[in-house]
Image (tube, rainbow, N blue to C red; front, side, top):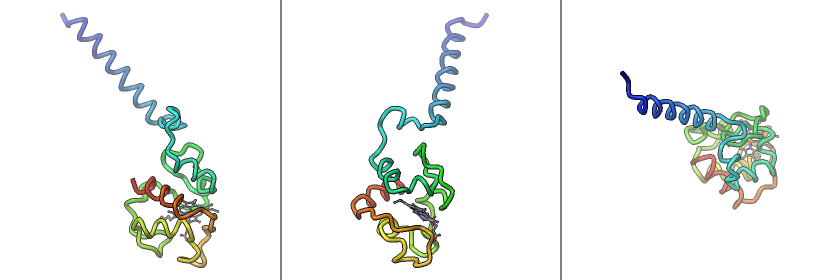
Length: 124
Ligand code: HEC
């Protein structure tokens, strides 16, 4: 006869895993639920990035004007013209039109230091 305690433990484990799966796919994301949103999230809302881009981890960011920023660190070029280094990403966020005059992405007025915080978040 199977050990009841073993079955009980297995049931608890299944419930915990199910809970973790729900928490990981929850909307808003877990870090937002826990009130641990990185400052980059706040900046990406303030400067309108979230209105134009889908940004992983940022619940309100579902914009479809620009490309999704998911997996950004794996891309070779940004806006098809700039190498995707940290420096290239910061330059792009601060002044995309200096790099690609005809790009649809506007200059948002963001400071270099704020762009660095966003770049670190997107490249993490
Ligand atoms: C009005 C809409 C709009 C806003 C606001 C906006 N973007 Fe964009 N973004 C775009 C578009 C459109 C592109 C595609 C540009 C291209 O290919 O020329 C783009 C491209 C990008 C790229 C390059 C992605 C790639 O794979 O090539 C990054 C990174 C990016 N945006 C980040 C940001 C960040 C960070 C902000 C906020 C500071 C922001 N964007 C604000 C529309 C926007």
